[in-house]
Every structure is written in structure tokens, then in C-alpha cells.
Length: 300
Image 1: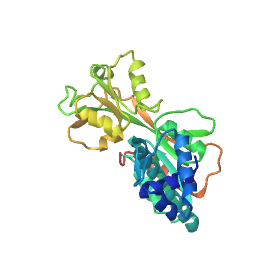
Image 2 (image 1 turned 60 degrees about the vertical axis):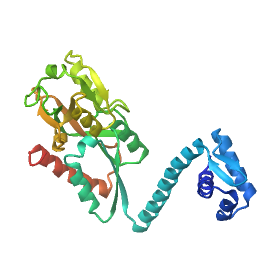
Image 3 (image 1 turned 30 degrees about the vertical axis):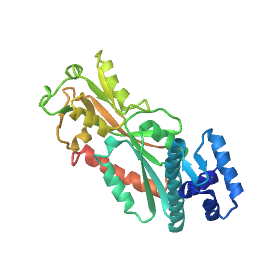
Image 4 (image 1 turned 180 degrees about the vertical axis):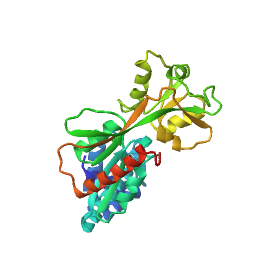
């Protein structure tokens, strides 16, 4: 399947008439008909129902139309952004992050980099595993995650260890207490993200397993916000890094754990062995200040 097939399909889908679509595409109708037939053969489904009055979508055709529109819109936006970047001579710098690090220092790093006239900053919400893959593929230049991953092409720097807290529904029996893990193990646990694994979910389960504690997982969520919503709904409790507690939400309370040694790292991942660009040097300098602020307790 080629890109032109999707573009032909989009025009035909908009017109629902092969003659008008061919006119818009500045081509004869028979070649356009062959292209649509070839697309249907490759997919193995009928996209249109033909009649003397024109075309109508099949259910598969409607589904394909909705999703190819997203692909083509994204492609056109990417092409336009690429041309703008080339004209502006700005340096592209990609940052990947897990959601739980965005309640602390990362927004300030983003703000300061965006203020630089020679930087075009892109952000991508990715798990730590996905960040490693994106770094190796060159899609991002720096990643912020929680999981230690051994990869010969990527280096990981521990910025600091962050205390873990438990998120509870308001009025929970442990509300207002400083519970131990054995006390938490008595209640259903919500873990996140469910996939891809390994992830913070495995780190969470490992905390209990290493202490010989069995937990009942009541629900797996793909997003942090979803997990917190499930806590509010009373489906269970979950563990979160300290900075997530900056997120105030009705019906949820956060408590520190009795064991203050239970922490979760914030890791900065970069490609190994590369000479740092000017943008990377600037990002590292900003990061050094933010980490020192965090360690000295000047803000969460």
C-alpha cells in the first residue's frame, strides 16, 4: 500500500462519486477505479458499495476512512512542521517522559527550553521502555522515566530518589495513618501502567514480593490519571511517587509510608557516546539547577 492510495481514497470518500473524484485528482476515471480496486484487494475487504447513483461506505470503509484521515492529517502537519523547522534553522530537541514526572521539575525545563529562539522542542509521553526505543531510533534526545533498563546504547542518570506514597480514597481505614506495606497488602491494589511491561507496575509488585507479601490486584490501568480515578471510585489503593501528591483531586488523599526507604528513582536517559549538542548542554545545565533545587527542598 502506498501513500497515493490513501490520498486517492480520501478524495473518493469525500465525493462518493468516481467521476467527480477523478476530476479533482486531474486523472481519468478508469485508472482511479483501478487504484481503489487494488486498495480493496490488498485490504481484502470492500470499502464501498457501488450503485448507479454513486458510492456508499461499507462499515469497513467507514472505519478505514476515519482512521486514514487521522494518518493523512498527521502526515500533513508533520510535513508543514518540517518545512517550518528548515526555514527557521532551529534545532529539533525531543523529550520523552512518563506522566508521574510532570508534577515536579520537568515543566520548568520545558518552559526554559521553549524560550530559546534556536530550539524547536517536541514532547512525547512514553514509558521508560518506549523512551529507550525512541532514543535509539533518534525520535527523542532525552527521556525522563522511573525504570532502570540495561542497554549498551543508552546511559541512565539517577537524578534523585523520590519517596513513594499511597493514594487512598478519602475516608479509607488508613486515611491519616502512616501505613506499612504489610498493612497496604490487606487492601486491593491498583497497578499502572498495564502495558507495555516492564513498568512501574512491576516495580510496585516487587516491593511487596521482596517482603514476602501477597497482594490482590483489583485493576490494571494504562494511565496514572485512570488509576487515581479508580482509587476515588473505591476499587482499591495505589502507590505513587511523591510529586504526584501535588495533584489535588477531590475524594483522594495521599499518605507517606512507614518505611521511608521505599523510594522510586527519577532517571534521565540519553544516547551513550554522543558529543552533546548546544541544546543538550543547555538542557543539562537547566536540569542541574532543578535537581539541586529538589534535593535542597526548595520545591517538590
